[in-house]
Amino acid sequence: MPEEPVAVVGIGQTKHVSARRDVSIAGLVREAAVRALEDAALGWADIDAVVIGKAPDFFEGLMMPELYLADALGAVGKPMLRVHTAGSVGGSTALVAAELVSAGVHRTVLTVAFEKQSESNAMWGLSLPVPFQQPLLAGAGGFFAPHVRAYMRRTGAPDTTGSLVAYKDRRNALKNPYAHLHDPDITLEKVRSSPMLWDPIRYSETCPSSDGACAMVLTDRAGADRSPHPPAWVHGGAMRSEPTLFAGKDFVSPRAGRDCAADVYRQAGIDDPRREIDVVEMYVPFSWYEPMWLENLGFAGEGEGWKLTESGVTGLDGDLPVNPSGGVLSTNPIGASGMIRFAEAALQVRGRAGEHQVQGARRALGHAYGGGAQFFSMWLVGSEPPGS
Image (cartoon, rainbow, N blue to C red; front, side, top):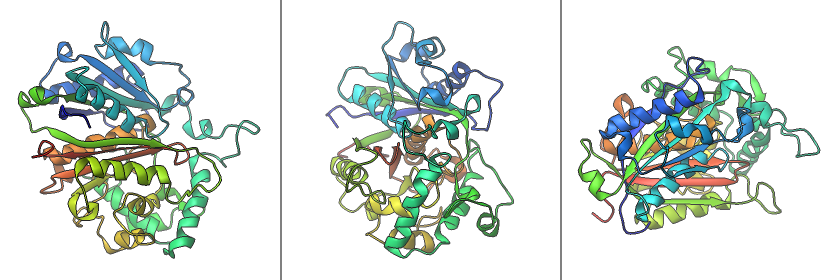
C-alpha cells in the first residue's frame, strides 16, 4: 500500500434476513451507512466520496441502482464509484476505497455493499441456459461440488469434514446478532442428516440467500486520531483474477488466490501466516471451502487443511479461529458478503466484535472470492498502524 496509512473507523451492518420487505434497496444501504457513520462519530458532510459494490444486476433485476442510491448515501455532488467483481465484490469495493485514501485522493471515504436477493433469484440467475454457458446444475453448488470431490480425492479428506465446518459456523452465528441463520437447536447430527443437494454438499453445508448491507468508513491518520474508538489499520490489501475456465486451471487451489495472499502477506510483513495471524474471516459459501482455502491461503500445507478443521484449530477457541462471525455459511447477501468478511476482520482487531470476539486479536485477514473461483480480494488489518 502507498505511504498514507488507512484506518477503518466506522462499521455498520443491517440484520441479515431472508427478505427485508420493510425497506427498499435505498433504505437497506442507508441503514448500514448510518450505523457506520454513528460508529465513526461522523456525519454525511464529513464524507468526501462513496464507493459502492454489488453483485450482478440481474440478481435483483434492477439495472445500475447506484445511479439513484446517491441520494440515500449522501453522495449528491460527491464522487461516487461502483465496483463489480462477482461474489468477491464486497472485498474489492473496500480495497478501492482504501486505495483512494492511501493515495491521498480523498481523506474520508464511505464504502458500502449490498444485496436484496428477495427481489430476484440468484440461484437461477446463476443457471443461464445453453448455449450462453455450460449448465451449472441449478446454481453455484452444482459448479463447485466437483471441485470439492477433487479436493477429497487429492487429500484423502474424510466425508465428515464439511459437516464439522457447518456445525462450527452455525454455532458461531448464535453469538452474532447480525447473522441471518440462528438455530439454537443445531447439532452435528442434524447437519450430517440434512438432504444431499450436490454430492458431497448437503443442505446444511450451504449458505443461505440473504437481504443485507454492510458499510465502512475509511480515513487517513489524521481522521483516525479523531476517532472515539480504536481503529483497524490496513496493513496490506490485494486483488487478483484469472479466467473461470482455462487449460490447466487448478480449481482446488487457484493460482490467483495463492498469489493474492502472498502479495498481502508481503505488504504486511507476514512470514508465517499460521503463527502471525490471529483470526481469519474467510469466504466459505459451501463448508468444504474452509479446508480448501486454508491450503490456498498458506495456513496449511497441501493436503493438510482438513486436518486443521478436524482437530479444532479453526474453532472459536482454537489457535486460528476461522469465521467467528458465522461466516458466509450463516449470512450471504452476495454483493455484501465479501465486505462483511473485511468488516468482521476489522471488528476483531478493534476489539468490538461482541460475543464472538477473539481475545487478544491483533492481526486479522479478510478474504473474498467470486465467479468460478475467478476473482480474489483480501486485506490484512491490525490493531496498530503499519510499521509500529
